[in-house]
Length: 251
Image (cartoon, rainbow, N blue to C red):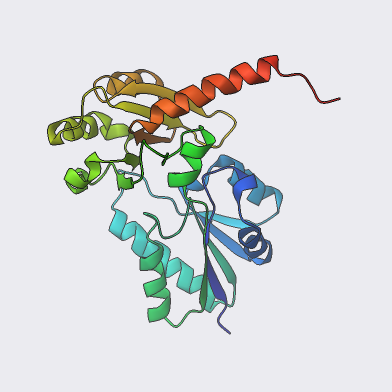
């Protein structure tokens, strides 16, 4: 008897940001196939739950298409054995997560499935750093790209806020591209390392100098925000520290 595959978004890494529905699927799973961007804390949670877990993350040096083929085949194999499979993906399954490709393969092989949305790092990570992606009078649009497809950065990205996923290694190229398209070299940039986790760090700069900042400091997973909203985030963070230092405790 065929089992079922749950395509589940794990959110940005903090286990507390898993949805209730995602956690329920994990609890009934016989096996969990998880990605690299799911994060260490969620991996530890799975181990503590006694789940059978299989790492299926991709590295930049691997053949992505071949690796994805293996993942697809493994999902089908386990489901055909009658198992409940959770395919756990960082963020949301349909935001640069190949969730659609996996569903196409499950349909082709007559495997029942269900998709459970996750909190995308596109939204969660800037918010955790107190950076509003939209703000009245500052930005009313959001342009989301990955650092792997610089050709997708066109004139439409020049207005509003730009969010770059998986762009740390190519940040200099990204900044150069934006300047060539017409962005001011002084446009504010924030790089959020290990967003939503205990060791989250935020680095500020502009298109002209952020490459140096990242090269010297950033080692973990990073998300990049470009636009005037970054200055709001810097102000909000400075005021948060000030308020926490001076506010009195409730009686």
